[in-house]
Length: 417
Image (cartoon, rainbow, N blue to C red; front, side, top):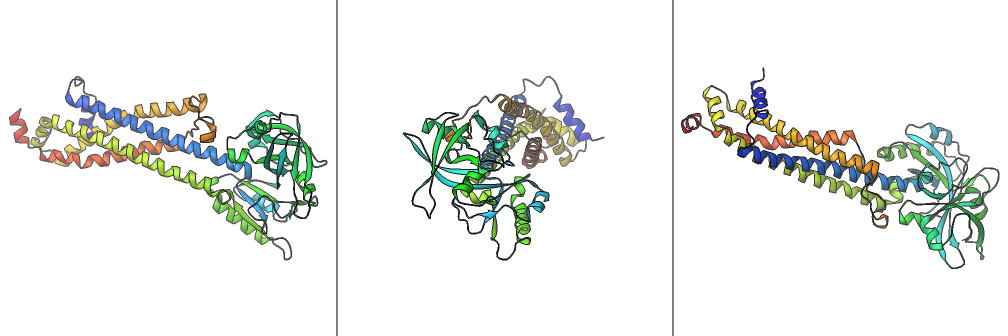
């Protein structure tokens, strides 16, 4: 039988101590622990949710990995490559690769009678995965694209539509300039729908349409594209998977063919992903501060408990109990008390995350935060780790204060009583 655990349980469930000094101080400490854990759960859920939301939006416009012509610069005016590449079949079967699709881009302008807006026309084929734009479609429909005939339908952002004062079903004129031509090329296309991602930098830029339109504008053959987009299943493995994709592409390279290079979304938009990485530091600062607050709250409670139970400590020492054995009693008791505070902290923190996830109570200004509502990421693993970490940090901080037990003399405490 674990004597220390038995005594600590009796103390924990002891009745009639509600008026004691230690009870009031412990209650304050437990409130601090509950609030601290709730703040940690909410902070991690919001930060990871926000990072995931922004990251997925950026990836939606350019996929995880791109394979393009080595001669293509970082502009949207690209050098063509053949879409009939020998490595495509192997890429589709690589572990971690979800999808491979072709694309082509062409910078230009979209114009109405009164307004003009610079855009990038992104052409895709009938095999394109429209999931991202389908989830962000707010009016109209996605463009209908086939391999047999060019489609005159385009998808533009709600922001561009408001700027140009156009509506779904309206025809607009797009202007494009080639380096070797003095006159711009015109396309008169029909707006099939509006999308909104709240990423202003991208919403103002991308117009989605038919790949064959870009081929026509650039005088490309039907088998020429700007490159390939590779979607993967795990963003955390993007560097490793990109290396495998690069090696696969190089293994099939043929002399005198266009040299291909790979790039990933984090290098294409480093300013966005560097900003998201800074958020991790904010999370760690919050976690450390809240853990320290919880630990110091319990230290004050433990000290009061020890002083208030000095007679019990003196008696146990008189009966032959070692100092470490008595310290374990109070450490066990501290774990029980901490667990009670953590229970309420979990209720508050998880409750907030669930309510926000399903009811979207807290709204945000999308022009400032790139999202309409506070995004949350509900993860049992994060919650479990936060609970384990809170208990571990709190108990470790209590080991030193529990040394006060050894300073209590059994003779003086019993005589004083």
